[in-house]
Length: 145
Length: 326
Image 1 (cartoon, rainbow over the protein chains, first blue to last red):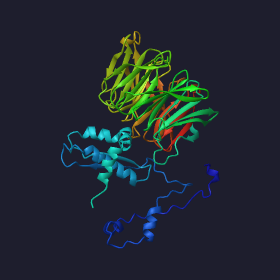
Image 2: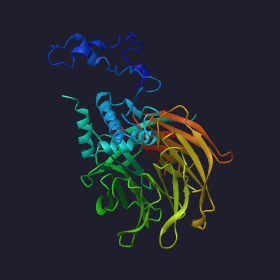
Image 3: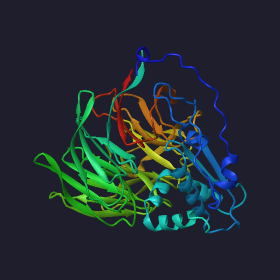
Image 4: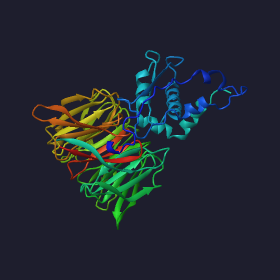
């Protein structure tokens, strides 16, 4: 897109209000509390849409960094838990946002090996592509009744 | 004035759930490109001035993602490596590629497949930690010649030397391994444990075969000199230059050495396509040009006959053509 064809060469940029986290806390997951869709909620859904003429770029794309602590240092399911976190984040975040999931330093005997596997895009993609692994992951992500 | 810019793109995949393009490769005339990906399809494109036109789509033959596809140097055959543990050989008959053989034997995901320059061999590698060398007889039939089990992790790529009968592999165990043919079997010529500090995703020879470049997950580029390649049993790789991409934290997934010059293209998780220059006299790697594309770049390849044209395979389903003006 050439600069000479822009409809608005110098758009006014407004400050962005912080997301209202409190709104979600108490009522969002309680089905006994009436939670009508309000203007704020609608705004929250659409606030991140980019102006195609002026996409708002950071110099380095933002990414999400999550560390998790296994219950015991020899937990054999740590890789699966890490994968479940990665899958949940990829389903929740915008498609271009990268995630790094790793073990809290010093909390697992084989943390380097697990971190390496979770950082390997091909291994993660192959695991997600595997129906029996995904059945287990989806079970993990169902949450408690 | 040197410059780098995108000239056109095509959509390999329009599947919103699994758009990722994993691999691509030009044939030796530089007129055709093959792309493959998560959508389990292979597409063959014709280069028409600076645009790609699709001439064939292959799908339904392999049941999981197709990780890599490679044209034989004569251009008549195409091999495709899939996570369904198979490799399919296609032959160009009439005016399209038809399935000729399905090679089975790997235990799980096949990650790369390459015909040797002579066309006599095909090398494949897998998450099962093995490298297989298949021999192709006069009738075009495939027989397993050697199963190499030296890696301790999944093998990300195989690579043939352009002139000598030497095969290379690298991967998850941070090692580079080189093999030669002893008359009966492919056997080890050299194991470089800890060749990089992290997973080695890709490597490429320069056109003379004197130098090799390798890239890894910790965004380090290394140049190796091939010493005493004849007899092939004495061939050794010697690390002569190392360069770290400092302004990124993401892995480097692909490297391609320009067939006509000392320019090296690298790409990876930070969406950047970078062109580096290798100076032989001083054994130095210098940054030259850089271009940011829209998504992670899984595979790049310089065109075989046009020294300023590059193709890149992206996570967003697109295949980009990039012009590099020197």
